[in-house]
Structures are given as C-alpha cells and as structure tokens.
Amino acid sequence: MQRAYRVWAPAYDLVCGGLFAPSRRRVVALASTAGRDVLEIGVGTGLSLGDYDADMVVTGIDASEAMIAKARERACSIAKADIKRLEVMDAEHLTFADSQFDAVVAQFLITLVPNPERVLDEAYRVLRPGGALFLLNHFRSKNPEIAKLESRLAPMMHHVGLRPDFPFDRVLNWVAGKPDLHAVSRIPSGPMGCFSIVRIGKARA
View 1 (cartoon, one colour):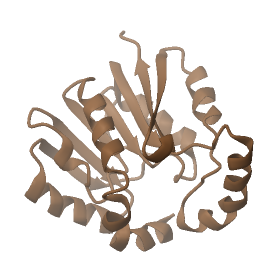
View 2 (cartoon, one colour):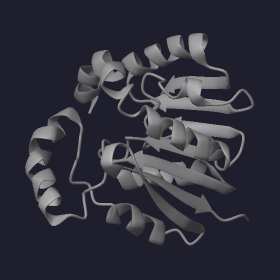
View 3 (spheres, rainbow, N blue to C red):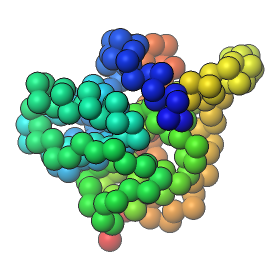
C-alpha cells in the first residue's frame, strides 16, 4: 500500500483533480449537512479542502507523508474552512477519541486499504451519535459482463492499490453488524454513474 501511495502521490492531482471533482464536491456538500466537525480519512493531497465552507472544521489523515505534505500546502492556499489537523495516521488505528466527529468522509479509500471493515469500524467509533459516514467509491458493477471485466482487471490493478471488483455487499454486511447504523443510501455519481456516494447514518443516543 505504501508503494502504491508513492506511485500515486506525484500524479494524484493530475489524475484525480478533474475526473473526480463533481463527485468530490457533491460528497462534501452532503457531509456538511451532518454537522460542523468533519474527519476525512484518506485526505490525499487535500483536493477537497477547498470545497468545505468557512463554517466547517475539517481534520484530515492519510497514510502517506508525501500526500499530507501536499495537503498542508493546499490548506494554506485554498481552504476556506478551519483546517484543524492534517496528519499521517493509520486508518485502521485512529488516535482520535470516541464520538468526536459529526461526519466521517472516505473518498476512494475503502477499496484501497488492506482491511476495509477495520477502517469502517474505526470510522464508526469516532462518529458521534446522530452523525453520518460518507463513502465515495467505485464498486463492482451489477452488470455481469462489466463485472467479469472488472474481475479480469483486478489482479493488474491491485499493484497500484485499486480493486475494481470490490463488492458493495461488503459494506452492507458490515452495516448489518452495527445495530445503531441506519438509513443507508447509495447515489450514482461520476461519468455514467461509475462511482457511488454512500451515506450511512448513526442513530442518536
């Protein structure tokens, strides 16, 4: 995974800046409705930091020092929001206290990490009751022919940290194990709806 991050860091903005921009802005807008304090897991080079409004407080973490260095530069130049912290951190072992954030955002991350359910567990732990988790990702297509192609591409793409064959059912199965999670919604986004914005609400205490 670290090798994949080192490969992606220099070209991340070029590859992801334009293609993902509309979906990125959409998920930020949705996350902003959940509350003021937002955690971005896998903030990358901070492409989304300029999308948050001035009344938001944003914390970002990433496993890559190269990505976080770029995010810090970007925070100084484009961020309107209060960027509270940008730190190198393992998404499977967050150092934040329980129930600290109104919204947790993970953009194009769940299909990259070695243990997605562990990362989701940590996002759930730091999310306040009444808050929401937002995922922006590509999941395996429901079209059998496209899914077959994704499965064929998967072994090659795993080398750069991508899993085009990742099934959405893994997210649903994880949600089913948390009785206080509810209101799961999945919105198509991106070119030809190839991405999904997933909102998972956490019940109030």
